[in-house]
Image 1: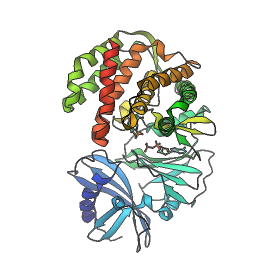
Image 2 (image 1 turned 135 degrees about the vertical axis):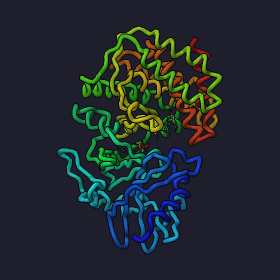
Image 3 (image 1 turned 60 degrees about the vertical axis):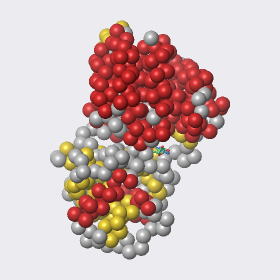
Image 4 (image 1 turned 90 degrees about the vertical axis):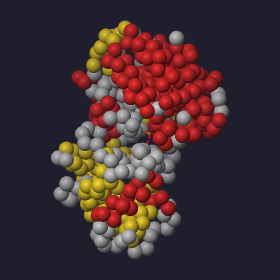
Length: 422
Ligand SMILES: Nc1ncnc2c1ncn2[C@@H]1O[C@H](COP(=O)(O)OP(=O)(O)O)[C@@H](O)[C@H]1O
Ligand SMILES: O=P(O)(O)O[C@H]1O[C@H](CO)[C@@H](O[C@H]2O[C@H](CO)[C@@H](O)[C@H](O)[C@H]2O)[C@H](O)[C@H]1O
């Protein structure tokens, strides 16, 4: 492909802010540097794997080029360079169906490796998942789903590490892991993607809860049971790395630090400082023993799929807005419970509604399901309040960056939770 790296760099500077997965999309990047281009297919069509640094953060891209563009290519997918049109190849089904079979052999390039015992069929028809989220996912022949991590971070990737560990203990309520795409950056291994079994006809919890709130009660109980089952499996899989503590003062300190960092840049948070710090201090005073362990880390209704009469939890990546070391750390498991409770609040306020009674019923139903397997989360109100507040603080930052119209949901929750916590 003849596109020179500097014309690609200019085009990317204009194109990146238009991509949903680009974290700082509210502004044009200052410094874009193309770090590595691996040619996966040469000629017509051409398929390139590109590592690019944007203001110091590394991302991966798949770029395509052909004599005639694929039909119905979204405007946002097109990168107009002076050397011709290049496009986000994830929107080109034919190119993507050839992707997995091309990921081998390039020195330092991306490599696909099946998990032990997994037999992968290549060249299946491919399509991109409609909704772009933090990452980009591709479905192959309704059999596999490949998530391409947009941010490339050296070191152990929680989605890969946790799915592999859960698989090793035969965990239920998770999708089978089939393979990974990895590479080396700066001499360190980095995960680029995870291939898993695709659950056809799955409906995610957010869609189910917001389409028919009335019918969701039993589902919430089953979801609570599923989470407690996954927590049990994670505790078992990472047993030697679980941490017994007598108090949660380190956790309280971490929540305080996180709030302080965000309150410096988000003026709406500052007035809540004293009450939030008091809630985190109550967490510090709670007496254990407690066990910290690996957890999901970003559980919400969109991360739970209902398929084949059961819940499957997906996306064990942790919150994309937090550093990898934090996301890989042992946590109190009620953190996952609290983030799901936040999700019921979101669903209750979705589309201008304000059904807080429904959110309360779902909280009770979910906690009751969890309590069928592990201790009842409602017996730890101080922990739940602190973790819900921490998540709501994160959500304020998330919504400001991605969906400013939604920022009222977490801000309203902070006020409400603080009003009931004292
Ligand atoms: N195993 C699966 N089977 C069916 N659909 C899935 C599966 N895993 C993910 N999905 C779908 O793909 C979407 C994106 O997956 P997710 O892991 O949440 O990616 P992201 O990190 O981009 O949010 C999900 O919302 C879900 O609809
Ligand atoms: O799914 P991701 O891993 O990309 O998670 C991020 O995006 C989520 C939104 O898609 C965000 O979740 C927030 O909004 C949800 C409704 O869309 C709601 O159910 C969640 O409770 C709320 O936190 C998540 O925080 C963010 O990390």
